[in-house]
Image 1 (spheres, one colour):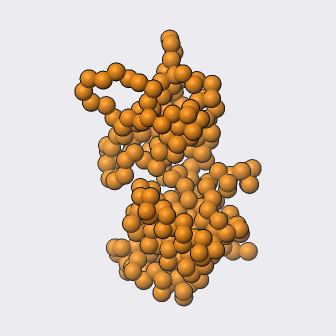
Image 2 (cartoon, rainbow, N blue to C red):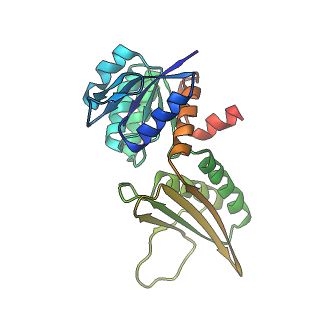
Image 3 (cartoon, rainbow, N blue to C red):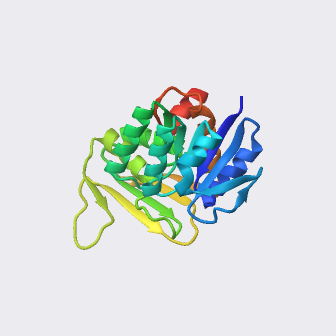
Length: 259
């Protein structure tokens, strides 16, 4: 059975990569694309890109099973609410949401009785990276912990969603609440978790967690060489969520069920 897919952010870097991945598969069909610019563009298969303001109208006509969103936090919040109200399942890879935006999306998903995969990173390697962090943190309870992430100079949110997910995993495992974002001035290091963000050039995404103790350090690192890894995971999630029960899931749910 073919899963019909629509994508918000169709002209963006991630959107373009996801469309390329969909074309490689026989079980997914692109039926609609949305963006805020170049709405006259025609995607592979003759699918026209519609302006984001026409989302509700075009979704009603094309009837996709899943909407994939890689846009901005403000845009994605509105897109999710519209799609959920239309009974369309979701894959959300946008990051940088506020607590209020997350609350609105979660409410819309529950009210619409749809299934949604929401993850800051769809790379298979990153999802393993998060698991490895919890294993290391369980053993290295007394070590200093630092998170360093680097992305391209056009990324707006910092720290990245991937780094924040790593932080949540570490805080939970270590039982630590204190976090320092960058350091400046004279201050002794305490028991905090340090978080540092770099924005430079065209870096796709690098994430490192450093555990340092007496006489040694351990670094767990993930580097994205291209957006292909992210796109492949997002497409995998789209195929999975089309048949999932209503609720909110992570990429870990997708991988655990397909393992």
